[in-house]
Length: 157
Image (cartoon, rainbow, N blue to C red; front, side, top):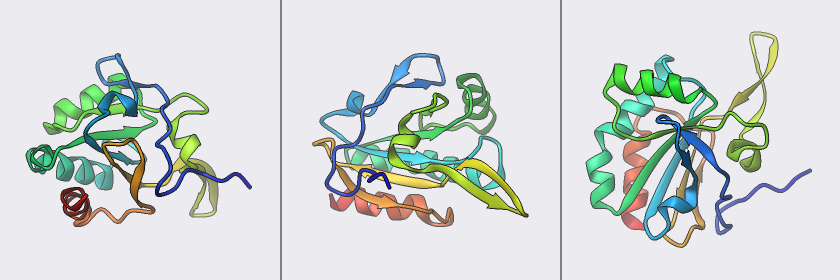
């Protein structure tokens, strides 16, 4: 069994694609704290709520010296539409490539729902310190109150 990065380990620095098509990776945020929240799919109820919650608290995260980055397997174009439709502020990245960040963290894995087996994203959040090391992991995540809990942890880091 593969050991995935945990608390105290360096956050893998794997290139993803931002909603505007540019390259983005965790080291782009070096020197500040970073919250990377992984969610299954744009425009689904839980994922929309989670993104809105992080966006609503984005100024508070900024005051805490913490950048935000939402990640799913959706395309950059879909992220751009999702952001515009819901007025989201937290930047989004596409982790569509096989061997991407969610694979490296072990959160893209086999899931089951109603007897159907498929590959899917386990809703997870990583708080990365300004040193690039993982400070805290939430997995799996329950959406209600999650962004506020992460903000409290970021403030205390």
